[in-house]
Length: 517
Ligand code: TNX
Image (cartoon, rainbow, N blue to C red; front, side, top):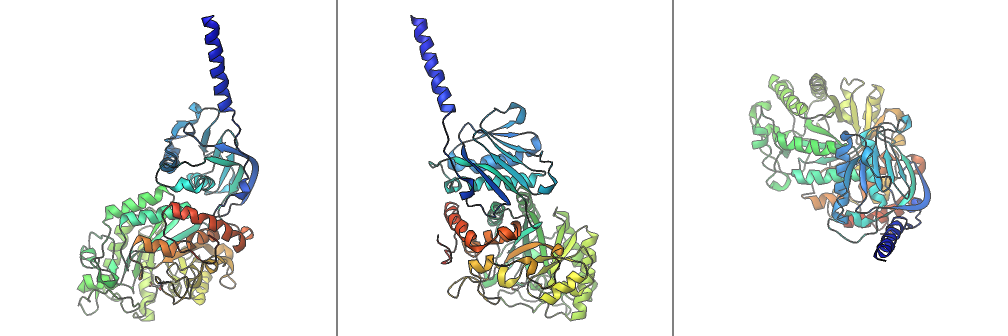
């Protein structure tokens, strides 16, 4: 009798367990999700996967562990789940998110991914680690916006089933941050990096020196930061990164597959250096620190040997702590350097950059110098310069000021920002094509795009966010997605959905009237 009772109870328990496991998940349409940048192909299967506390992240190789941690950390705050990370051999048959590098799919390239979602499992496959990260970012956008909250909230954790296949249009998908006009600390830069990572960007160009401030420690020239780093636009305190702090930024970016490109702007835009060391000036007199916003008044002394000792030390020290391939030498608006001197200086500096194993990058003005095929030109305003660079075989990064400058005002009432290149509403920021921006340009020579945030008018991270959002996701889509998939009418609907994400992430964004938020 007792035995029978126990058997009945265990049967009941078994039935209950079975039923909870076979519970039907809702039917969901993957094509209705708002993914930015828009992927190459999205095929729905009208079911869903339930993410819950028992979901495991399965990896086949320990070198994928950092990405598994990234995913687990991303999902933790809002769900409260601390997902177990297990090796593929120990994974359960159901309820896994598997990260695997077995794509063996040449079309996906170094950054593409394949995301397969069914009722039982999720699988992200790529050729390289970066592709897995981008698959994770897409998966993140398939979860409800509440996933971005930093505390546990009751969110529905069903993910629409189907498959997504995706890879980028351009190799170079970047943004620039000017930390010279106003200084931003390590935590602010990390936040900027996290925001770029959400949208699959892979380059952060740091504008580390300008007239108003020198922001990176150079051990052989300590006064650059002692004096040159001591102020900023408006006369505030300024600041600088020690080499250790810079390396911390580089490592943080690297974990998100973002390359840091350091820029030391020369031979103009150098007042902070000229104020720090008298010997860098032709008259041997240090200049005064500068806290205004004019450009084009400073120049290194072109025909002094000490100038090239300085350039050599700066490039050597920064190159040694920069794993990325590039060193940006600026070269813009050198209005107080004679043209022949400018060319002489750029030619010498390019050689120094190459000596330390880096690929030189410069604003489009450097096309006038003896640039070689490996040089990268950053186009910002002058078509003739860009064409000259291209005719010499250089690659070009597209940063057309009238479309891609994050420091331009949105409209005439925007308080922050400048307007010398025009107003850039969110639709204008989205509706341009790098391939046709300059006549007769050969698409193959375009490395990609970069949207620069100059910081004359921005003083803190909230102000940065206001100018960057919501334009940045549009730049990311221009850089990542195929032209045939891009159009404003579809994009503005997806962007509207991302507004809620911005709020969940506490991003201070501009609520453009062009978008139905
Ligand atoms: C032009 S774009 C500059 C910067 C300013 C910016 C302001 C470029 C290469 N140089 O020095 O900060 O305009 O929008």
